[in-house]
Image 1 (spheres, rainbow, N blue to C red):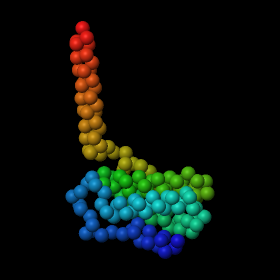
Image 2 (cartoon, rainbow, N blue to C red; image 1 turned 60 degrees about the vertical axis):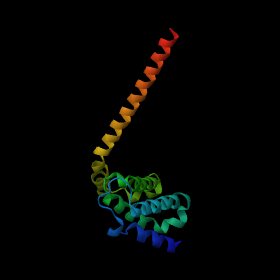
Image 3 (cartoon, rainbow, N blue to C red; image 1 turned 45 degrees about the horizontal axis):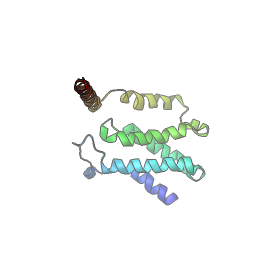
Image 4 (cartoon, rainbow, N blue to C red; image 1 turned 90 degrees about the horizontal axis):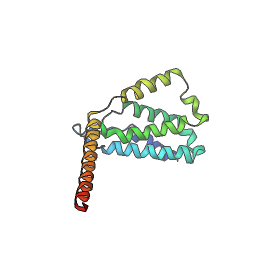
Amino acid sequence: MAEWMGMFATYLTYENPNLIDPSEEDEPQPIDKLQAAIVDILTLYSSKDEECFLPFLPQFTEKIWNLLVKTSALPKHDILASTTIKFLTSLISKKMHENLFSTEATLQQIVGSIVVPNLAVRESDEEKVSRERNEQQAKTSSKRNEQQAKRVSHS
């Protein structure tokens, strides 16, 4: 297990500018996908095989925390951000791990580095809501027209 954990730790901090398209804001990059998959695996270990994973927990908690803090608010990082939050939430929800998050400095960092920056609504989110609202209005209008046509034809 130590060999796997060593590789996971390496890839959680891996950076390669050649694998990043700086102009891409929506689609996750290969490294983002890999890191999200590793965090998912670590979440499973922390919940299903906790005893074996316990020696690695402090190291991965710190690495995943740092990964989350440096993750941008761009849509391409949504999956990575949500998987890191899921991991940290799984730890916070267990009484035995409360000491990892109980200091005031940690709570201030959670609020300042994670919560507050993510309160803003992105332009892409506004566009998506607007598009979905327009599609819903078009469907509703179409149904009304069909119902009116049926009423007229039955009259």
